[in-house]
Length: 176
Image (cartoon, rainbow, N blue to C red; front, side):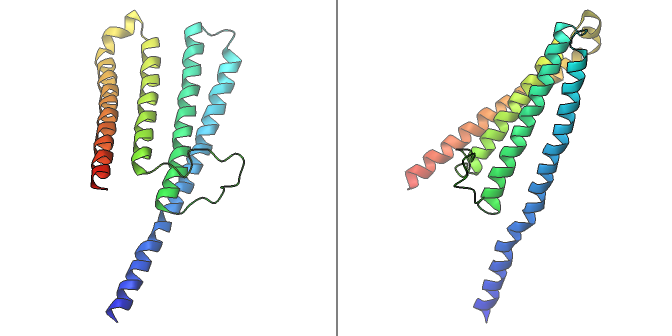
């Protein structure tokens, strides 16, 4: 009787992973929303490219790159997260299946996410520095400082994640 209860409990716990599926569908919706903003920015940039300054065009392109990185990050989280926590995606024979799909573990996903966050932060920082003018420098000095500090915190976090992952994999290898 106790074994039957244990088996039933384990089955409920195992099947509870499917509660994550709506989260991943929500992230797919997030990519769709991001695409709308991407298209809006692209159209705005295309309409004003002739009259815009070179730095405005570069900032607009950086915004597009930023959104593309966020979209890629979302896709990576959707694919890997679903495969790690919910179920394998059965598209092994599809010609467009990404090579990394099915090969990213939780540690690898963590490193890819922090790497993408650092890249996104760097692009935002670059956009910020490209818009600095003599009038705004004094007013926004604290904001600039905090953006650099936050970016460096992301960089440091990425390095620490990589070091911890390396130590963890070395420990795992020694115990095997």
